[in-house]
Length: 356
View 1 (spheres, rainbow, N blue to C red):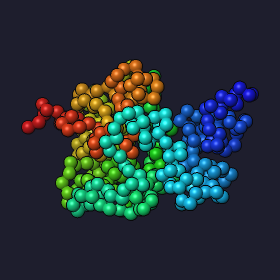
View 2: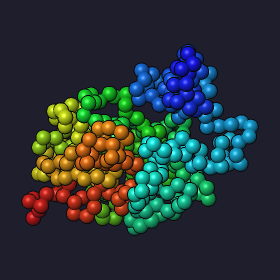
View 3: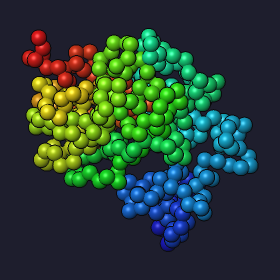
View 4: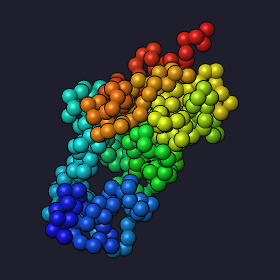
């Protein structure tokens, strides 16, 4: 028992691990399932400290302290909401949302800056320029809760994001691995609620960057141009020279081993357009995502997220694994969160041979 307890202590941090009933002893590894549930059968009902509460819950203690809290808001243990979030999401181990890129010695070229700005690029629907917006963070600057719902209330539908790190031995996509990322349906500054993660969600704040308005931008699929817009879990992607309406996050059993998971396919569009894509434009996330080498329609570059380790090249079986870090939409190694730069980006959808 002593050895097992020591092992569990090395796996979880008991102070942050709340197993709501059923733990056989303090520090039981099953406690980890309260916050980290991808590999446990309880995934469907456990949502960490961000939801799925019981009437006997002790999850509140993870983020709130009734006595002895800081002078900040809502009885949080840290001075600001940002600092409270980063108590867990701190970038260590390569799994955090901020700090990972710089910690590995690379330059952060773009970031949604927390507690540092209240200006939204492309936020003006009339001019396409910036808009100043009062947010929920310090000095009305943007903070985590402007995009995320800390308690999991009023969030978008779960979608198959890329942060579940696949490799060739993963043969099946499980629907339980989808997540809402606790993204709120109505970020601060948005005029309407959006139930799915796609262009309309981004345009809630970046009002001047959507299609159908007074500002001329590259068109994107949104409610402004079609009644059934594509979104992150429903977009026509490249597969074997045709297209398929499915998720950008994981493509299931497309292809054969060892090249079964092709995350890049959602970032390109075939040309000429296929039947599934008629009447649709790309969504924002097909140009704005984690930086990587994508290739062109019909010649999509290998982009398996990892084979070994946490996604770093030095841990990979091949030097072409991409992307190195999955930090979108918090930080990026590329300007303006673009998946690729300049002409390489355009040729994801517009091959040179097809240009007029």
